[in-house]
Length: 348
Image 1: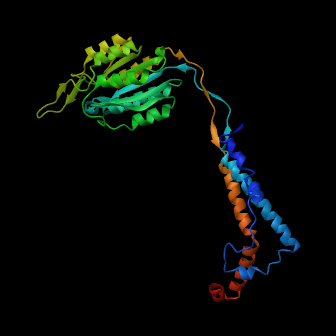
Image 2 (image 1 turned 120 degrees about the vertical axis):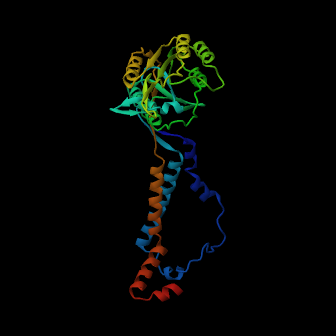
């Protein structure tokens, strides 16, 4: 259906008629504009039959132009059919650690060793694609935590922004408590039975204004379930001066705190030591039961004001072409150009 955003603009439609009848008539005729081709066009016979028809057509065009402009001013818009949004799902925030340690190359992806962050982008990106019906949001944290994507049904945008995230953009340290605190702020206005946070990190909270356990207690008060994932291999071979040696690249992972955060909020802590384990964890999180939501619908809106505006512009061009003086002058100019008498035209 078509609706008008500013219907009161239609009151301007009779304005030209009111101006015509209410304004006083001029006592004498004086030229409002002097044009160089007036003398050449003065011979035009406006009293002829074709001249009267042309005059009537020009008046009709002026009326149509005014009507089109008024119609455009009312801001017509097309309202489409109602589209239903998904009626089940969760408000699910993904908090991803992008600190400097996520650049450790202890993960295997497609047969090659790569960084932890590259694996997270691949696995979490696939997880996002499967979350049809959920509102998803993305929080990135390092030294600071910030909201990269608010809660939205647009899964493609969430995945794209995750894949474009550079390592260490939020700082080289890890502020787990700040990430949880930001999540609480974003989820507390959503339905209480619908709040989920999945937090992935490979380190220990070593910076920030909020203690992770205190933030988890606040999340528990707001009925936010937090699923924590400790990511990183436990064994990595590094080259030495004389021989290779094995190290534990996840020695600083604070499993105790992550477990406590999950227990306080009714979530689960899981340890991912490889790409395969991380994929299995996110597949297990897919088994979360959806929560019914209120039915939501929206109608697509498409503006139509530019159609009558373009029509008025086209009529204006036609009106200009039908002007008797302009027509006569253009004809005279073309005739003089063809007779190579351009100099006379320029000096006239």
